[in-house]
Amino acid sequence: MDILETLKTLWNESGFQSFFVDGGWKNLLMILISCVLLYLGIKKKFEPLLLVGIAFGCLLVNLSYFGAGSTDALYHLDLWDNFLDPSHPDYHSYGAIMREGGLLDILYIGVKAGIYPSLIFMGVGAMTDFGPLISNPKSLLLGAAAQMGVFLAFFGAVCLGFTGQEAASIGIIGGADGPTAIFLTTKLAPHLLGPIAIAAYSYMALIPMIQPPIMRLLTTEKERKVKMEQSRQVSKTEKIIFPIIVAMFVILLLPSTAPLVGCLMLGNLWRECGVTERLSDTVQNALMNIVTVFLGISVGATTAASRFLSLETIKIVFLGLTAFCFSTIGGLLVGKLMYKLSGGKINPLIGSAGVSAVPMAARVSQTEGQKANPSNFLLMHAMGPNVAGVIGSAIAAGFLLAVFK
Amino acid sequence: MEIGTISVETVTEAVSEIAEKAADKGDKLSISDAAVTAVFGYAVVFAGLLILMIVLYCTGAYFKSKDAKGKAEKTAEAASSAKNSANTASAAPAAPVAPGSAGHVKLFDVPDKEAAMIMAIVADKMQKPLNELHFISIKEVK
Image 1: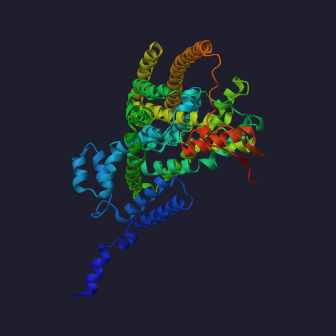
Image 2: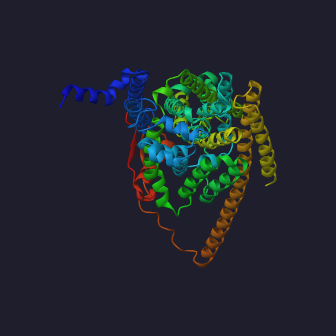
């Protein structure tokens, strides 16, 4: 046995040597980035349930995929490029993915087919109490206003040279709704999924840092001190009828929202109808956890170095932040308008909760309200716009999908 | 619903018009088209949620009036049964107080409202009716 030759073969087949061939340093950089994301998820608790999975997916793909010839890779960017190329024989062939793909390719089929985001929405529906929204339907306007960032970022992205489809996917980051952003991006601009998902979840985790300065800047001390009256009690029947009405109305208005809104409302109906507790429990816990595992790791897999490290990613990160800030501003401005129109009965701080990130945005409104007036309890009032934001961002995504698909 | 039907048709037409425009010009959108799409998209989100708000107000009003009717009927029933029972047995003893509900809670630096909230939370967490619990005192720990 020629030991030297064997060592040479082992070296050539190992991933280590790939770092030293063309573009290999990019993988090394992505491995460092994935470690930073793991740190943020584990130590700083930035949306850990998803970010840890995304970061580890990012680590796995950059340890195993070094370009089109990587046979042992867990995720193959080139296979998915063929999948999307109408001139290629493997165009839209899931069979080819199953035949030639790695583990993460197969898991990614669930993202590509829009299954995971819809199932996550089902779980979100089963976990959400729409009572605060039903008792105060005006909250829907705050949820609508807080979609301002989506459309401003869309416009900004077009100005920065992105195509309409890419701009729509970038804009939806402003909806502060991870599953919606993933759903829309896989349909319109799948090559941007990695940076968009990471930007969306990172900014959602940063809401307690991004929103308060804007809230303090746009509201006066007097406005922040406003104590809101308790909302009326919502009957069980109303809570049961609500998901049925919303599903019918929103899906008829924008049929492209059907997977997201349909699943959201089905989950909520299971929660509220009182006869499907087992299903509601499964969707809220077991199913949600399983889908989160698959979604996180397969989204992370799309961050292959050759695609992720580009100027586009920096632009997306910048536009995502802009989208978040303007969504907060939109909600606050309409909140201020409601404050004026109601004669000072509505605290404008609940407007910022219109960005959907449930329940973090509502908690931020509560914290800021309590800082101004320690006896202020805004949480339940802010939950109305917060859940309205979920419906609002689904409608915004449905509109963009209808226009650009 | 009339409003819903008009809105659905108008939105569908406008969306397909914008989509055609986007397709005609390839993937790259001009800045003016992007501005129109952004404004129109924001308007669609507002319109959709505004109509939903109106629908919710309508259903809310229906249920509120139903609740009010139910309450009024219950009150009338209770009043008439009380009248009847007063007629048949005028000297009947008063209903006994629910066990455990008697007595006063001593509050130390705790406002009434917060005390009520704390008691309600404790009852909820213990899955026990409030009148079966006996609170002796509530004190703010500083």
